[in-house]
Amino acid sequence: MAVFLAVALYNNNSEFLFYQGTMMIIISLVIFMDIRVTFSHLVLAGLTLWGFLHLAGGLVPIPTDWTIIDASRPVLYDLKPHKNFPKYDQIIHALGFGISLMAAYEALQAHLKTKLNLSFPIMVALFLIAIGLGALNEMIEFVAVISMANTNVGGYNNTGWDLVSNAAGAILALLYLNFRHKL
Image 1 (cartoon, rainbow, N blue to C red):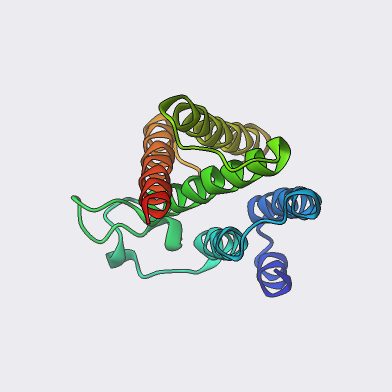
Image 2: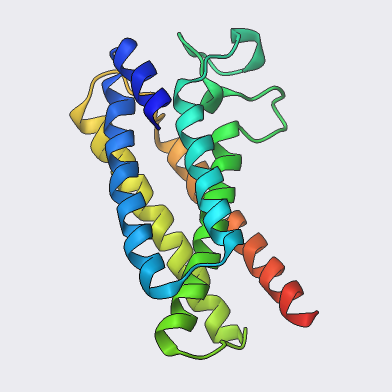
């Protein structure tokens, strides 16, 4: 985070500083929860990877020919090598909110002090928690858009794809948890 902070300060990137501040709050919440939950190594590694890829997405420049969207200074979040592939941003959303679903599952088990059976109602609840966290993320992006000029957030179409990607990641995480429980 220190390297990303230095790059953001050097580039006078206020949007990134906003997101890094948000990440510090999220990291603090994860540490607070981990003391109570003791997240698995998989969830902690996944959250760490998600944070790194999220920060890299906003700062690592890419050549303009690596994207099919119009960006004045393209970064990894703009990466879309082909019109039929998802953007880097959408892949990171799917990863992040899939990991969020797994963290929610572990947190619920710790809170209820029991191993949760992945029944349909539990899966629906986990799915709704994950996409609710994704919606919270979109509200944070909205705050960035209304409080700063020239953000790289995108418009309504981007928000829609982010929400779809969040749901796809949550579904993939549920499939993984189901597979793991059947072993």
